[in-house]
Amino acid sequence: MNTHTPAALLAALLLAAPAVTASPSDGPASQGPTSHGPTSHGPASHAPTLPAVTVPVAPVAPAGTTVRLTVTGPAPATTAPTPDGATAPAPAPRTVTLRCDPAGGDHPRADEACADLDATQGRIDRESDTACILLYDPVEVRAEGVWHGRPVSFARQYGNTCELNARTGAVFAF
Image (cartoon, rainbow, N blue to C red; front, top):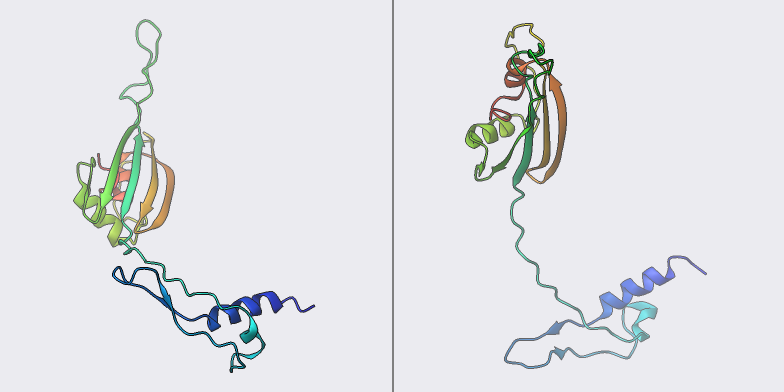
């Protein structure tokens, strides 16, 4: 048996089916005439005809941008133990949501952050000629979400906030 026969038969059935038209005032759908004699559709013309189905298509909204951004760091100003021997606590992560098209969310510089993402076609990290001080004060960042319909998943550690700002613009400036 030919493995393409079921698919070809289904395609022929769908092509041979008459269209169904209906309007609210017509009541039940009316079906066009059917032919039971030989036609140019070949051997499938003897198969029962199926009505064509029209499926309404919802309008497609343009893909937007919603990204959850998290910054952890820099470390506390001092890492020296306190007089009681305790060390300073690790910095708490800060998280905001950035929305674009239109700019919004709880990001304090949403317009600038969206413009930076648009300028780099959704890339968060980019090259920079900015010279930063060689002080290691690490900052960890994470971005998860969607930019113009494309998934975004980004995580990186920068040496300090100068490097972070130079490489990501306003995206993590909160």
